[in-house]
Length: 123
Image (cartoon, rainbow, N blue to C red):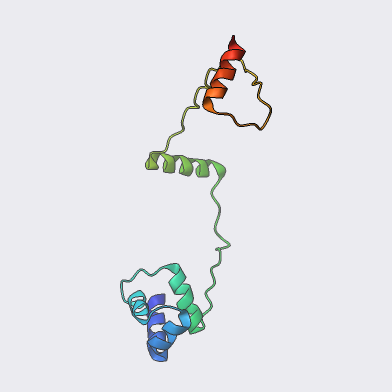
């Protein structure tokens, strides 16, 4: 319904001028305002601005938010629907005692030098 109104206003003002003001191609504007089109919200906002229309979205004051239990149920249903399940934590890797390197902090050696220093530390 809004798109039909925008289409009528745009045709009355001139599609080329409205398209230029909205920053979209004229052909794209025709496609966006065609019956059955599904334009992006960004395009609707641009066209509305070019037409001098201010759109306001308000929350209905009589809307009652869901209780916490219902919110949890909705989240759980979404997880099961998407196939997302809770993963088990990975077991920690078993490592031996820490071995201190004899290299000064910040020095970078080759793999061979590192391996040799580890062998010396273990010996």
